[in-house]
Length: 196
Image (cartoon, rainbow, N blue to C red):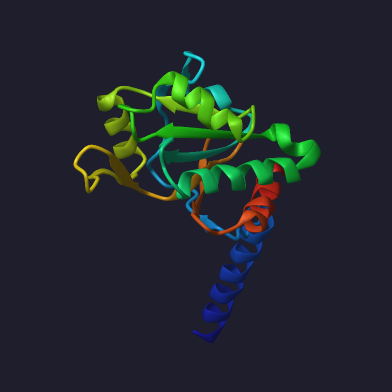
């Protein structure tokens, strides 16, 4: 009986050792690792130049995808500014990153408005829009909360929305959930891991 137990333990140990040798080490990200998640697979929207785009158009690059709106007073410009700093600090690797901004305010964020807003942070940044139904579909597919909030005067409104960035690897797989306010340093380090 003892001999069988020792043989069994030896076999289990050998299997674990084999598994360790054949599987790649898992990356240790500073931001939330959502690798393998079953949402946010794709979109079909129009960019700020009038071209129809999907996530597949950016295959081969690491994609940072953020949902927001042009009249956002704080979170959206701060996030875009942080992403511009990250891109600048990447230096020679900056071309490996594509930043995408999807509006949650299709009523006010026309092609012209987005063309003047998003690329102002970095000329390579791409703004994406769609009609109301398309935006509702993409926010649902990406599990993004977005709700119009009426202003005090009854005319103007703002939008409460998920304040986070999704990051995709060069193969188009969703990898990271980056909460607003995490800072430039952590994202920079995580992107470098995805570039390797």
